[in-house]
Image (cartoon, rainbow, N blue to C red):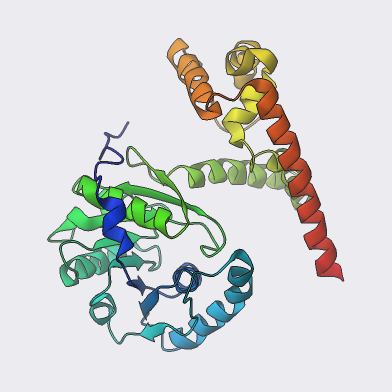
Amino acid sequence: MSEPVHSPGTDPGAAAAVAGIETVACIGAGVIGGGWVAYFLARGYRVRAWDPAPDAHTKLRRTIDAAWPALTELGLAPGADPDALEMAPTAADAVDGAGFVQESAPEDLDLKRALLAELAAATGDDVVVASSTSGYPMSDMATAAADPSRLVVGHPFNPPYLIPLVEVVGGRDTAPWAVSRAAAFYRHVGKSVIEMDRELPGFIANRLQEAIWREALHMVAQGEATVEQIDLSITDGPGLRWPVHGPCLTFHLAGGEGGMGHMLDHFGPSLKSPWTRLEAPELTGRLRDDMVAGAHASAGGRDMATLVAERDRAIIAVTRAVAAAREAGHA
């Protein structure tokens, strides 16, 4: 198991430090980078972008134009301007004067190492450089940087202008204040942040996504289910519950009044059932106790009846909203 790389929330002045940021640099303007550009513009920032592709500006404008109606519907920040964008000739020019840097280059480790080293050298000692990497630990990406202390992972989800989650974690040589400041900045711009305690390849959400994806591929390969059946099994099944409580609190409710403890004691043996191609961990006493304690902490004092009512209201709302969106799309 990896060692903790920082303690979340170690910079009490992080919120104040990010409040004065006016310009954000976006390095890489592909699908993810372009989504970040659109989001930062919608939050009222000036954005300097750099991408080596000769048609990067044209593609970026298309991304912004396509995203702007949704961002407008969500609510623009005062002064938000889709034209508050400058394309810089070099990465160093893009980060000059920027208060925060979001790197979204392709998932190539050597490229990431060289680019992050360049960005770290070109920015001030109070500017955080965050990488949108979807899987590499920062400890692996920061090896070429003379000063890796301000390099963090800020992993978004596609499209970054709509999906709120960002997973934030530093590397072995990242300063704790840089992680806290990155998390504070993302919260300041309206993101939902997981400030991770330790590095984990693929982070949290991607590992969970990958588990479902691998099992889906196995089922299709073995002729056990079709693509349509697999998608419907999530969209009209457990996927409706997850926006409300996520998989852990969902199983907490599955235990009834006994909660997570009863669910694990009753269904624990089924973990060894050959339902998936993934090997289940041993359900030790410590793992059981950690899951029970975690479920109670996640419930935040809400009793089972309150959680059930919350889930039911939200599922009804999500179901109606999805149905309305589909109906509008067919109109």
